[in-house]
Length: 322
Ligand code: G3P
Ligand code: CA
Image (cartoon, rainbow, N blue to C red; front, side, top):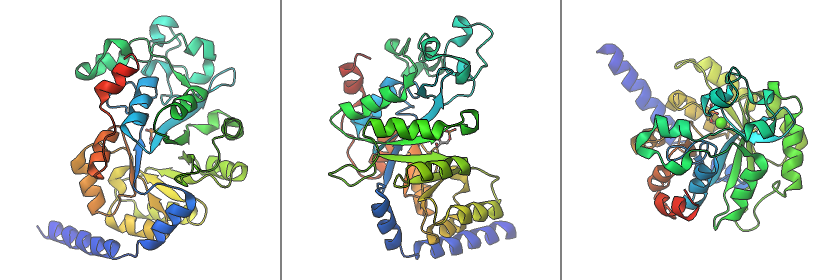
């Protein structure tokens, strides 16, 4: 009882502290960096409704009106950048059938031609029968180029939120990424909105430092996970990032009001991952951690921010042959 009362008092005090923080500095920093406030970040696309990081997931997110298409960038054996999250290729593909014995291998053990033979959708149908669609069977792993083409092709112009995933496996991936984005005209800002076309994100500070050298004007967000009450780790990370990157992407359960206050006081935007339900957005926003969210359910987040869902999933999927 006493412990609960003390915890409630500490939460209340920290909450009051963070809500009374001046937010105008943050607004200005977000605007200067070209980061949307409040950011709807479609985590691996609309990955609640379609297989993660595949064409239908990104088409859904784009046409429903997400601000950002999030993707994990890895590199194939023959040097092609792809959007793919898993460390083991067989986690979200049928690699066990197509390449028996290689299903636990990472993407850099496969050429692009090999990866393109894989079905990246049937696992989703099996895992989520209520959201399954026959047309998801056989969808392919996407290259970065294909993702850019999707982002460029619709009525909406979402930005990209690209993570260098396990960059230690892919020496030079930052250079490859920046060069490809430059060649495709994806560095810089959208003329109309002034939003940066790309945000970089990574758990690895050295990867963000490399990206900063190569493309200093592209905003960067440091991803972060740690133990539930490890305030020292949070504070150390905040100090490292302050003045270098524009924001942090913590796992959502770390967004205690005292942590939020420390980061906001340092002028850092906070984009928690991965938050899907409206009640969860509500709690995190109440705690001050609502500068934007990584979400598998961008339609829920749009509703939470009182923004329209621009088109229905059914119509989007039908229009695109899914
Ligand atoms: O990039 C934000 C969040 O996606 C980090 O976790 O494992 O989903 O890439 P993960
Ligand atoms: Ca990610």
